[in-house]
Image (cartoon, rainbow, N blue to C red; front, side, top):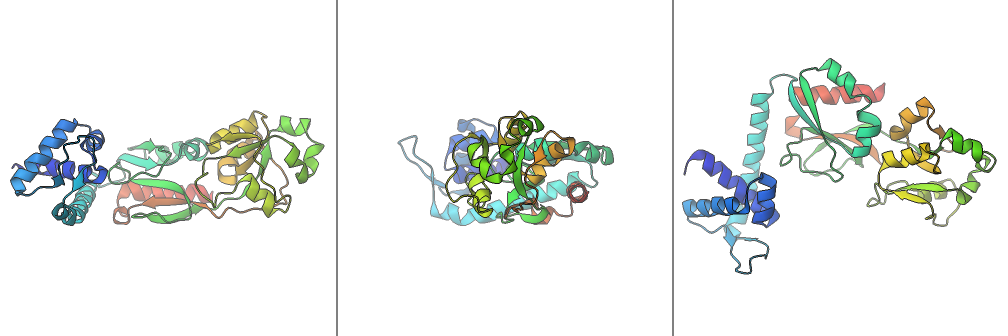
Length: 304
């Protein structure tokens, strides 16, 4: 078997085992399921061993054989090392394409308004943003570096804290003028239209309206009425449009507060989120020049 076919067959086998499906592996590798099946069969013939238990049912999930399972960790480690080696070969300076994984809201409200500063400093680096709503696998998706919101623990990634965050109510100046009398007392928030951020609804540590109201001893009841949006940038836009009072995340709302599109209510009432923003990357890629340049720029920008 020629070496390129050998590597392609190993990639087809690894993806099929991970997804337990030829079809899903084909979608990931951008080939047809038939091509994946042919590569795997060729690898089995070359090795003289079965890699999957076949099921004539057709749609049943692939079941990896025991001997194949024992080999998978070494094969995956080998691909990891190959990926690192290729990165080093094609990246001997802070140039080329840099793929950054971030949430759509963080891209819209923080990174994109600032990215021109990085591009001016490193004009030969082309930034590609991967704004997947869910955490992605850095190796299989070709991610160089990312910014994630959480407690700093993500398997296989090194995490450096970038920014802490405070949470507080905000509204538009026009909304404040209309409801100025009611807004004098935070207790009256319970009778005003509230905008709920559901973007981190899966995390029990995310600061919600209930969390903020309980923390400030306003009420112990659940506050569910009002507009519900699963994107933090859209939550702020709804508040800018005068739809109600939003519970803002300080990093996201920074520019809107600075320009006067939003105004902070009850600045004396503090509530710091237990979640924070972290720069994340594979530890073995730390010295790659383009990654190091972007990491240092993020830290500098956050401090400024």
